[in-house]
Length: 200
Image (cartoon, rainbow, N blue to C red; front, side, top):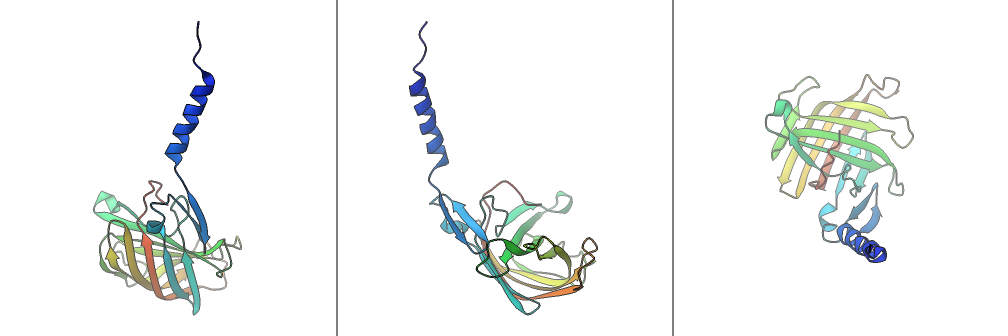
């Protein structure tokens, strides 16, 4: 009985694997590393800025799994319509790598202004959640009380907008001495995600 040339099969398999993986570039910018094929690296650039209780916070870059600073369109409440879902991540300062703040957004996947007058105003089916002190492993969570999110541009590949709001301390992190938080002058320019791994 003749056996196939195993060394040829091994080399052929390695060639197929390398072709599927393709070239990657890995650059760390701000709070997340951009890991993408050369063709899509430009599309995965992201940035945002805001003032949190008078302190400037910024973030840029998209992580490899596209959970940070990349937008997803998911089914709306009860399967009706479409919802835009994304997290903005920021470091404590520009020299840090680990994120210290995150802001979760969900809102109708439509251009224009989306706002809630208070935390129990569900007329816009939108919401914001602020997490602080992530880098210190003592996460403090705040729920959006009164806020406005404006989508100024939305295409198949990118979304830009502005945001601001007042936040109240969440019952699941009750021990923080700071009971409220305020965000002003928020701006973002992020890509639409190409990953199928939707953040929770």
